[in-house]
Length: 423
Image (cartoon, rainbow, N blue to C red):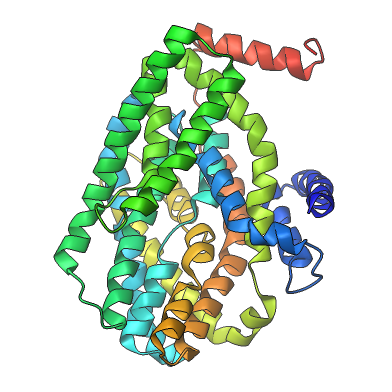
């Protein structure tokens, strides 16, 4: 496994450099490396590494969501709150409805099977969107109107909403007794409880750090460990009370930023260094999930259905921006930024197939749902990442920033390390 990991790291670092030279986001190259090296083409990734792929991808996702939390300014969130809330469910609803009505026509699925597929496809990928938005925040692109911060918040809540909708639909399909009103009520409960738990834990951590003042590296390791335990807690509580661990993870960063900006910038800097490694793990292992053979079988019908779903999603996204202070180009950027699929599709794309097998049902619809989920990653993740990067740099204006003393200190420290002055 160690050799396979070393090969991935070396290859991805080189590909990342090459892709950035030709003005394409490095993560696109990492996705392609994962697909090529994965079990469905060259089979060069060690099976033991693939066996722990889900856990490694989860840790990488936690790293990037923690970084997102450390960039979520309260003032900016208040400014974009309503639009972020609308974006968290309206685009997904448009896409789910489109897939529900078009699925029988394009793929021969039943209406309910199409709705399940729509719920899986309806989520935007924080794995693709969040790193790019953090990059824009660092560059102060779109900061004046809070566009990247809005996308950070909305994309995370979007996933919670879609997963709850999927849970309701698959329960009905399998003949389970599903309390639809209770499940829908679980969406705000899950988000609210996640925020509350994250804020409380963040406040406790802030007080501990303030009292004992451990090194920044130890603070980061402690926060990462707490975040992983929160994900475990979500699974323990899933049949008791709805709880979103990933929202809680972001809330930890948010409260530390509000209480001690210096801590937040310092920890974000450390996480940025961890992200260099975590990014490789996340995107190569997501790419390794893509079965190209299965994707090819879906043919043009699958691509057409996904495309029409994205058109419906784009209409919903654009409607959310009406009445805002965004200009037409910025609205177009928000639409583009809400297209990529990867994280949720990789996580639950195979779940209907497994459920159908367990229930003794015909598994053909499950195979088709998995196929289209895979195609959506292959189709939208590389193109979406490239489009967000290119359009964002052309559309989002760079805002001047008055650096705080704490942020200056962190930046100067990073400069010294990069320049070889600190060993």
